[in-house]
Image (cartoon, rainbow, N blue to C red; front, top):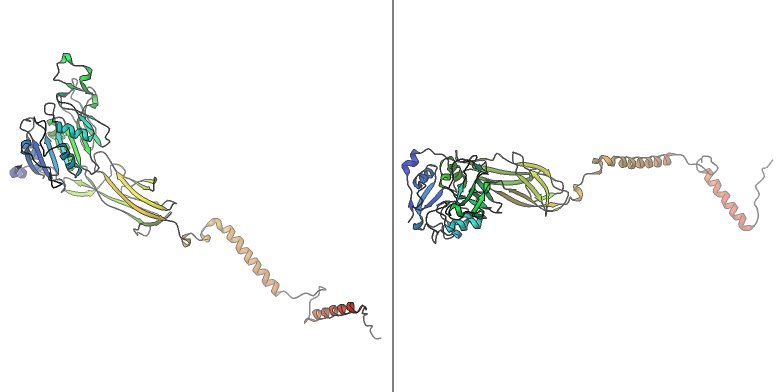
Length: 436
């Protein structure tokens, strides 16, 4: 039902330009005999020489994209022909489901061959393909504008007569190639005398000749308005991007540890933490994954309800910081979305606890407390010195003389007793006279 293109001789003789990633090697090319502007066999042979397993089918053979809810192919090329619809197995819903499952899709349509299925897929993705008969024109030069330097650095050539598209509000859309400021597009099927301003589809750079899109599941889509964009260096760059040979990233792992190197979901407020993200990029020349050399900074957010920190990872992929002075549930949120590159996303939830009583710094380690500690120390030492001196000093009598063996205290006690007894009898005791 689907004829497999086995050009073993061409694959052995051709030089290997690139190596596709393991998850993107099965390719289906669906074409129509009416589209004679493109050599399908040469395109298939080129993909085989690059390491792909290629199947070529016509729309009348009704190839299947899905089988029991799973995608059959990793990459699909749709080369539109005279058919207005592609059949029951190639509906717009099938293409969208193929992309939802991680498959890649590249579609070609021209002003003469502009099926409704392609326009329906475009409407679902947020851009509008020009109606049948609307052609691109530039009467002054052949300049083109390449918007994504990491995908197609430069673009030039005569694309007069190509189909165009208008981009919508979908922020995931990428204008790959657009017309020069002097370009325009209109329906050439109408007579020039009857052409009005309302017949102009787009002006200047609004004439998009190649549209790219990368979904949140990292599947890639491209629409082109001319077979010329599948030829030469531009065609090689375009298929390499759609089939994930280039700008293909993956997040191997993301870790976070404390200052002791322990990875735990429980941290304390103000505790030092090191967060690392290991990102790799596919190298189609060697067919291996290598450490990603950041073309721009990858940002990490530490958020509760709102971000507390926004930190840029260093080129090593790590960043050191302290947890905020706030306890609760926090999330290490990494969301890397650079146009033309695979999206990276990772969320890890951790708990930040308040410090325990024995975890705080002792008072003697705080320099501001040394004044108060010195005051307490001198007060205690002064009191102890006073007690020692008081206990070590000799006793003093009531008349200011030092007591000797307790005689002064005994005499004073006897005098007090005599005074108290005389006061009770009403007589005044006289002191005894000394005998002469």
